[in-house]
Image (cartoon, rainbow, N blue to C red; front, side, top):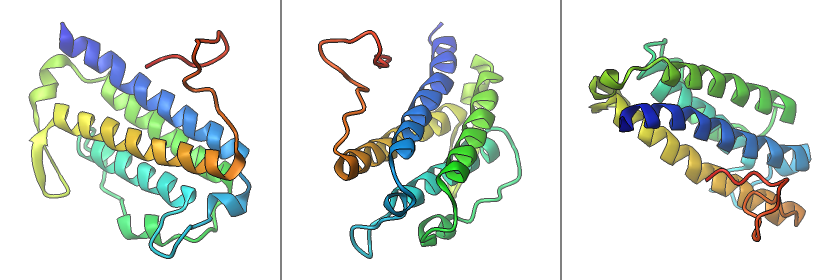
Length: 168
């Protein structure tokens, strides 16, 4: 059943991507995490806060019916004040919570309605949105970390090397 496959895949993908963000954060300094290339750009720290807010709101609130505690503007207004370890911990907690909510879903629940940020959609659409959104910003974080450190993280090594994470 494709629904069961999706429900198994979605939390694993979020965990994989958050692990890649943690790897990037491990290579950066505090100044690099909060560096903005321009006044209208976001730092890696802002992107991590934004992902935490988005996942918590869309999965925690929209799917898991937890209180909506998001303050979206603060995700982008931050200019520091949170250490790398605190960012990693916040991300880990949010992803652990979201993964548990998704894993608890039944295939039948994927068609239930959800209303998030004024959008009326299904639980399936909410989960898809989160994976797509998380993936896009993970790519931005990886790009920024590579640019600042000149490091190749080996997430997609070819030819395939045993030590690299080759999960698509």
